[in-house]
Length: 486
Image (tube, rainbow, N blue to C red; front, side, top):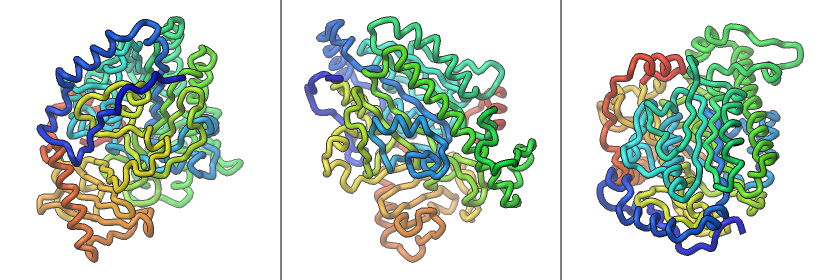
């Protein structure tokens, strides 16, 4: 059996029911340390060897609805589709935040951004926050990460916590292409695969983040036959974001985005092939996810993410494969969240989760517990930037949070403004593209969801505004070049 006999139920807290200081909950307690220590001292070398490998693959800026196994009509992701046939597909997974560093921090901690501290790119993880890498390292794993975007630089984020090896070497570039990321991962994999120690690898691909420039033979793959790309995408994009592009230009940039997805999918397939060649695949938990999505051509400020919490930016693909393809072929309709990944992985290893984790293990849901997550409401964040949401007329508070509460079929989005919260309410069942704000005619629903949102804010520490940070000039230039204005 791929996981050892379960000794206890996972100690996963519901963020709406927790008590105490939210910052304190992010720090592992002495009791938790003693429990983990006792567990380790009771394990022999043979016990450690039986742990499955954990492979976590994240693709940056990948929309759920542009992935083939989620119904997209373009064959953007054949390798992910093949992988998904052996795995569990989650049809309604959402991101913690619509930008890279906060969402990755939530994946690695099981905490929401206000609790773990990475509330923007270039913000650091709160010191002492337990991470997936740290827990697995204490279990005897060799832990490694290979990342390909400046937004995950360890010097700015502290996300290397718990990793023996954290490769964020991009040279003089601000992002690396998928081939480079794959090549950089091979040395660590080849070295570590030669032993009997289980491995934890975080493999992050920056593609398909802007500027949507997949290399040959992937560039142009989704254009009509005989057509070629414009060479001036950086000149086209500002006009498209202002709503002044032609239909042909919009279609070209969407095709460029899809090219990047196909390029990333190719190297996802190569990674899976390498795991199989090295004999790591059979006994591996493999998690595939995006950090967030992307607004394409469906609304103002197209080809962008970060400042809005609409579905195209927060709804993500999430697929989990267990050793021996256990549970393979299942599709889960229940809403799930990035914060659920850490407790799920640790539950699969029969390992206690750190105290204060805000996610829930997905294993009961996978095994058919229909009561799991009943009436569960999920929260996603964005950072306020009024120029990207012109429908919010009052000046936004820049160091607050845009907060979306999904209480299906309804979704409430709260924008922090100097005149108080500005609310948008959508019925996702009738209006999945979020085109009609129905808040004005549904005051009772808004009031009820706003009260629930206020309780979440108090519980997680989101009431505290993000403190301004003086970014080093190099970091500021990098973020501006990648399209982040913070």
